Amino acid sequence: MSVTTPLRPTPAPIQIPRVRPKSFNRRDLLVLFGAVSASLGLVWLLYTQLLPFQGIQGFLLCWVAAFLAFYFAAVREIDGRVIARDRTMAALVSVMAVAIVIPLALIIGYVFAKGLPYLRLTFFTTTMADVSPTDPATQAGGLQAIVGTVEQVGIAALISIPLGVLTAVYLNEVRGRLQRPVRIFVDAMSGTPSIVAGLFIYAVLVSKSGFSGFSAALALSVLMLPTVTRTSEVVLRLVPDGLREASLALGSPQWKTVWRVVLPSARSGLITAGILGVARVIGETAPLILTAYGNPFMNTNPFSGPQAALPLTAYNLFRLFGPSVNEAWTYASVLVLIVLILFVTARRIGRRQFARA
Image (cartoon, rainbow, N blue to C red; front, side, top):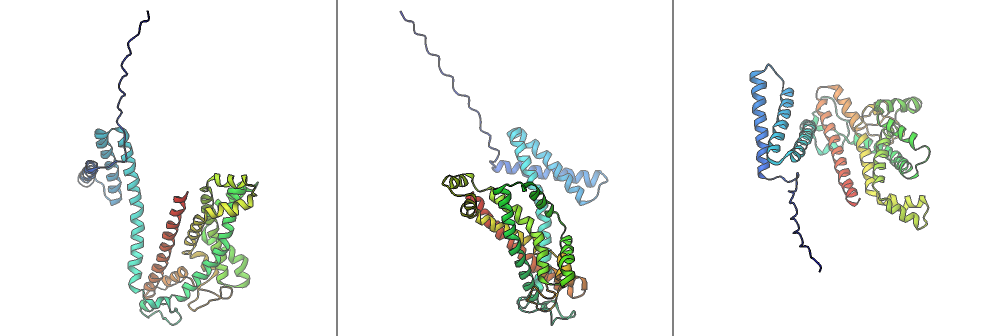
């Protein structure tokens, strides 16, 4: 006779509650508001009433520290330690981001507030040749500086962008014996002071042939090259290795794989690298003092004679004081506006590249 053993009932699976640190509802908002209010009240009482402390900087630091402590304790009692750590770190990163954005916004807002009231359409159509120091700032002309900046930065871009992309291709695709020295050299160039680049071009070219916009472009290219190279290298790393392997498996040589597969795939990112390089040098003033020198008159030939530029003209006007300071703020506001447009454009193009990757 066969004896059948009864089957044991299968135990029900243990239901483990899911942890979702990113979820944020109305209760979490109330907890956050309560931590902010409680920490503010406690720090105000201790800092201003009971302890002999002064200064807005110390007050803000104490408030942030108290807020993080209160917020961590409150979330831990409600949702547990894991979510409390995540929420506290998110709050800390947000506070640091606000601490960085606020000074930047204040600087940009102050420059616009000082310069935009004096900006007129004639600024883009006239020069400073017929403007005297006693004329109102609304008559300032910036055409000669705009033309000079466009020519100098354009020549620098023609030199640096192809060279930077080729250097990035060598570092990421070829990986020859000189890869390590080249990368060290590029990293060292990233920290080169702008005045050193201007002194180098002055000693090599300006001291022999005189001031010119081309000399300024060479100095700017020295500063632009490491930015374009490092950004292009990062972009090339985003190209999937499967594309390279598929091209090589079909019999294409490496140079054709890079030219026909890798570079087209990273096209938008390389454009972003070029725009970031331009934005990096368009506001440089120190190398232009030693190379372009400045000129209130229109000079469309970058290879002969001193030439104006937006940052250089703004610097010279600030040195004159009086009514010229308002004209300098006008130049500065136009320059900041151009830089913002370049960075926003680079951001939008780079977002497309990351989305494709």
